[in-house]
Length: 298
Ligand SMILES: [Zn+2]
Image 1 (tube, helix red, strand yellow):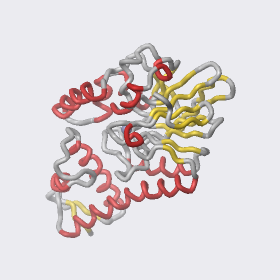
Image 2 (cartoon, helix red, strand yellow):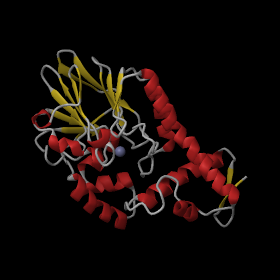
Image 3 (tube, protein in one colour):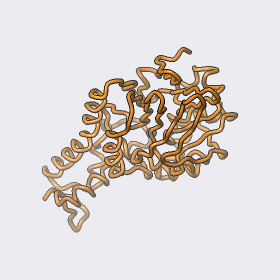
């Protein structure tokens, strides 16, 4: 497979529809001595030697759609940010990363083995914020810890070209995802602010939006993406203004996904997301919880 874009030592392989979920986008960085791959989405199955011959695999974060090659590339060392490391090393660790009940995790396990070739990598090692990998010939990758989507989510930047792989701060119309146990809305918002000032000339997302080469277009996309958080606050608040709702009722209405979306984790992701929004709205005094556990707009 040919790279879709090349920026000096950086080769970008776009997945189906610019990496629309469940696919994603793959980056390979070639230095004078070392070749590093970022993530391994579904498209990674088709790349061939450029990926199979990599010296190191860096994960932007741990989710099954970014880890498709972990089993097939067992000969390539893999690193993830230390906060996501246990999720890479074992299914037990991955379960804690999601934090869903066992019956959902059992269904999820079957699905991610079938569809994403899921395999743990007990040999994976951790990296930290600011870590640098010198690939030779002035080619250099640096990790920027931007948590929220997951606790260990990072942007990976090749500094000689200014190509920033920004992972699942994916700038899609869906908006930010912070629905797992290890996710945090508060951290995601801070990461969005930090990303604004990250030095880069090209931004590559994991999903759907693909490659952005204009700073103004990137910032516009980032603004629209970040605005989804406020829109979710407003939608919840509007619902609570109609009448008080319990958390279960709010989850049944859904905030992220259309009602009836057939993915095993949807209800849990909705719950975790709505809980975090309710916390914010309560802290602002916009929402109160009554004695029976219902939430009402003040
Ligand atoms: Zn993800």
